[in-house]
Amino acid sequence: MTGPVFAIDPRQRDIATELHASVRELPLICPHGHVDPRILADDEPFPDPARLLVVPDHYVTRMLLSQGITPARLGVPSSAEDAGVETDGRTIWRLLAANWHLFRGTPSRLWLERTFSTVFGIDTPLRAETADEVYDAIAARLAEPAFRPRALFEQFGIEVLATTESPLDDLARHAKLEADGWGGPGGRVITTFRPDEVVDMEFAGWAGKVARLGEITGLDTATFPGFLAALRSRREAFIAAGATSSDHGHPTARTVALSETEANELFTRALRGEASPADAETFRAHMLVEFARMSLDDGLVLQLHPGAVRNHNTWLHAAHGRDVGGDIPQATDYVRALQPLLDLHGNDPRLRIVLYTLDETAFSRELAPLAGGYAALYLGAPWWFLDTPDGLRRFRESVTDSAGFYNTAGFVDDTRAFCSIPVRHDIARRVDAAYLASLVVQDRLPFDEAAETIADLAYHLPKRVFRLDARRSPTQEVESR
Image (cartoon, rainbow, N blue to C red; front, side):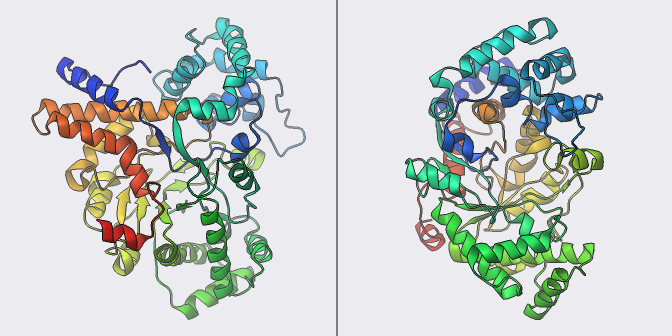
């Protein structure tokens, strides 16, 4: 993939170009993402360009909403019968093209234009007058066998891709992938355990979801011990489907270790519908401690990405549901919030916690010193609003002093947009190349060590941190260090 290495100084740019070239062809490790597994399980041709690249991409639809273009006009499904959701892909595409200027300087434009050129071989600039030309060119590619999902997976050089499922998911798509030789332990597509909807009492229908968890596992989830046993049972099923990590999207990073009696009382009160918002926050905080204990037993890496005020745009949530661009970042405390968990298990190298943030003011003040001071902690890549060339650069500049490179977990694409995966990884590699080149230019790092480091960041670190390099137990990993 041609393109800039995000460096201005000529000497730095030359070194960065050489560093990037050394990792450009390394396989992609994708340990955290939200691609629908049915895409790969069914391996059907992708739909039209709009339904592939616009409708499911809330980065795109939220920008257009900010200018008064409703998601319904962009084909986003709605719960309202009279929403007038657009169904014609060409109409949606023309609307995007007519408003393409809104994306100037944004990562969305960078990702999409690189996807057009590197995935589909289309270099025609998108604008209102070229909308049909670009649409037809992409549509023609999507009709070719080489552009079906599994073929693209191979073309992208993806070594492993983790999807994200609820414990209530039957994992049928993963079972099909495993039957086809694509899934399961050691497979190319694995699942991730995401228990938020049965842990967060503020989810709509939470008590019913807990009951459903009991039905799936055959365990009594009307009691807190039974609830924990059911979660352990589902984790076992997820591990059998290849999972190496769990994923927790809590509003805050708060942790608390309740007594058995306190946890039982809170859980029972919530099932009766008597839990307050404060109770819900306390329960989420306690469950992070419980999940850490489970991880010590089964080895799942615990990913925590707090800081989003979910469904802040209440109209958008009511009309179109969750995960359509209505969430907003908030300031997040980690130092005090995580201390109860770290007091219990933070120095145990068998535990692996990957921390993310939407509050980049916490990078140098809290997160880097924490990761640099506890054996269990690693820093996850900038995600969501921070997953940009400038955000990735600021991350390295902020955390390296305290955490170094090897207390970070490498890049994660965190995307639902399957075709953008190679673009996102390549941009991250270019950013890291530019940062490492700056250290070489300043005589702070020899070139050979910079070359080794960028290979680790791009490939080896995410494999190791997310336990994808070898399916060893946490104890075996510690003994081999």
